[in-house]
Length: 218
Ligand code: SF4
Image (tube, rainbow, N blue to C red):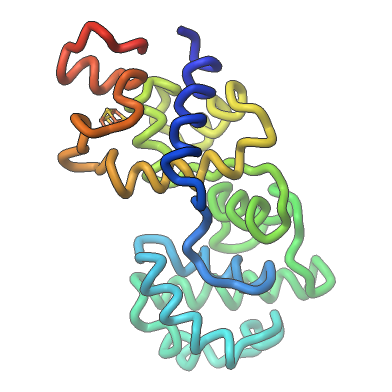
């Protein structure tokens, strides 16, 4: 079975397993999602939502972050990991949005990745969820699931994105991120994945390697 066919079968199964798969980050506009996504690095979505619930009441526009007192902004996000660096990114990011993008969050990956603290993963999350574009974001779960299934041989997120977007139809890119994240959190855990109850074990190279099942279609 080639990778394109395998990806289709896997996504069909995961769609049924997680019919409501979506980002867990709470936001009401592109700026809020951009801020929440920057804060979410090395921090759970649940904690980010707790922090942004208060943050978004006080910081509503790019100007609010750009003009903020750095110490005050740090204090507002203190529960998240690396809050000092992230506060700097939020300020720098919003300054650039004001100076170069007319105060609006840009809606292309090229422009978004020019913002401080924004890599392709963050850019694709914003594009796929706040702008409704087709965008596949490779986080740690997507990377692990894709590698274990044998949909990529790469270890580099940008290369994995290229590999996956080559074999998955464009209209499934955004959903793929949510499905792989949901599957990675529930079943394909980093340590002790729950392979015996995995609904896509038939397509998993990892399963074949670990359990040597002959029925595997990988
Ligand atoms: S069989 Fe195991 S390693 Fe393979 S996708 Fe399922 S949980 Fe992950």
